[in-house]
Image (cartoon, rainbow, N blue to C red):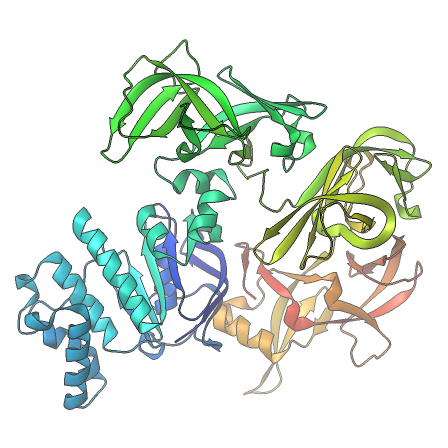
Length: 625
């Protein structure tokens, strides 16, 4: 029935308190989206902004491609179901369900038709003459759903609708809401703090913390491929096991040294998505594995080499009927210490007691690794960077005896065993000076991840479609403008430019104003799109506020047409990367990068695609366009 688009949505309360930070996502028609997270994470605030019950501080909300930031709730064609049902106690069920239709002056015969049809769908026909106090919690929840249903809305918004019900009734109502969603074939957005509800109901789940989106994905992907420790620990019951560790590598053997004293040794194949820089036996990481991926060692299991054997001492056993949860410790000298604690899911007939030393097995295919400081995953499903050690000789990058000529702009002295970072997306397959063998291929949704072997080194490359086969030898090149060599203070060319400025208005006559983007002394006439977005988000508050204008290098070009000129500056440096050439341009004492083969001191006129410019309120650090 409706699609939604939320772009850079912020909610800031008095005192610059940010409740929602840069919330962006596209919701397709007929999706069942669940916002989940702990109390105070911003999920209900986001829902209320969609409903129009909270003003949007900044950002753009579209329903069916129409911007609705300034629409009243009644004009958005959405229906909201609240946690406390919000039924009128003096009205019957029929009157409660009919109320919104009566206020909209719908004819009585059509009201009767809509209410009785909704009551039939929800199984509450026999309660239409009762008042809310005569209904159970589940029946009241059905009435609240029915009141929303009769309006035939584009979008259903449900704010923790089951939290007041007991466990059995919650399970029953979950099923009924899912059936209703499938029958209506419309868009549902559902808020809950219960991860079981989120996992069982959502086609996609938005995990939030402290007003930020931590991850948006399908339930199975959130479980299998968490982007960070928060998602890994929040999703899944019991929660993931976490262990402080360092990693070492000897040839093709990698060892995780857990802080509790346990060592987990494996072939490099199982951990090749972890950047080599973490394998120095010094940098701290978090080793994570879910209880589902730990099992009691048993003769009925065949170990195909993808499981590693360890021992643990049992501290607590929870018998749950269909399964048994065992709390143990990998440090056999202690039972109750938190360091080394591991949770195992076992079968219900496991005859184990406190103090037993048990043999367990961990899956080498399903463990996770997180950076200790950032808590972000460093064993991502699709790696972002290849971080490798190589040599530089005669201005050639030597990668496992393969040689790549460096451009003059990267002219560096010879160096051995230096760390370089090559973004996965900067590796271009099909031609180039380097040769690699396709070791493995992984199809990940709409992307193809290639494992490329150069002697003993694995590089990752990402493509949109499958072009090569396992075992095939391919040529490859690297976009050197995106490579970093920290030891030589060489970093990727910055494709994201920013200029400081403001947004001003000047009086033309008593009734007319002109608006300008101001950068230094330069005044640029904004597009209608920018004006509309600025006024929608901030109104009069935007004028003379310190702003940052941010834009991509690809959205700015050199022009010879003075009518198109929006900025003018002088080139102060040129960076020739061979297949790409960039120039640094000084504008009003600030510098930006453009893709252009210029000469030093050359004056250039620049045309910017203003509709692609991001505008940031510098004072409170929020994106307003």
